[in-house]
Amino acid sequence: MKLKIAAALVAASFLVAPATAQEYPTQPLTMLVPFSAGGPTDVVARLVAQVMSRELGQQVLVENAAGAGGTLASGRLAQAEPDGYTMLIHHLGIATSATLYRSLPYDPLTAFDYVGQVTTVPMLLVSRPDYPAENFEQLLQMARENPDETLLANAGPGAVSHICGMLFMQAIGEQLTTVPYPGTGPAMTDVMGGQVDLLCDQTTNAIPPVSNNSVKAYATATAERIPQLPDVPTALEQGLEGFEVGVWHGIYVPAGTPEDRIETLSSALQVALQDETVLARFNELGTAPVPLEDATRESLKNQYESQIEFWRPLIEQAGEYAN
Ligand code: MLT
Image (tube, rainbow, N blue to C red; front, side, top):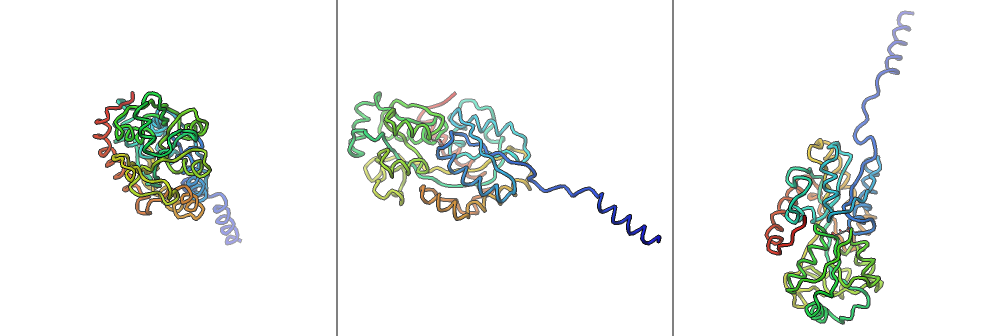
């Protein structure tokens, strides 16, 4: 009898034993995108977030927090709880902003920790469909003769379209009239509609409208031609030096996020970068995933810090600052 009672007590103690704490993550996560929905950063974010959601067992909700050339979202991340539930996907612009902005609502060198690099994306120069230049040479001539009337769209200081446009203007030796947007998604809509003349954008956003002739492509800002657009020559091939920019993306968390949570996020990112659906779409859009060893905390930290140093003198030389 005594034995039966003891066995029942042991069984009961298992029933009431506190459940072991569920492992991170136990609730949905947020991935901030610093530009408009439908633009190039958003496209990469949504592809990656879908696989990361599956891998983490929790939704990764993409939130577009556009404004101030991407620095609004970076500021949001810097203020977020360092608990592994808020991430930011951002490109090269997070490094250029460190110099472009005279004051930022965060310290670029201490505000963030790093999940990993994501992709590299080429850029190219496109125009409204009825822009009269028949080739790049004519475009350069028109822009040089009418700089004030040539409307060059961008997504604000800190956006790569801004950096690319800045390099273009430096290369041709003219200041064009720049028109800022909250992202190159809406900027591209206006290029297609003929409201602005030119835009330097990432292939992620530019390949679809170039392919269906909604915009014209004149030159890539790359060392080699882009395989998905073999008929578009590089600017260098067409005699324009100094117009080259390579975009890279990374995922960031607030400084102070526990290391084991960062590792969980990095592992999920690495799975996303091997997913066949993601890779196929990246390829269609001219984008390449980074090698897996770069989808890591250390690699993004190095890339971010060295790119701040790389761009600082170029931006200082251009003398274009934002407030
Ligand atoms: C976007 O997502 O709209 C772009 O990345 C903006 C840009 O940097 O040009």
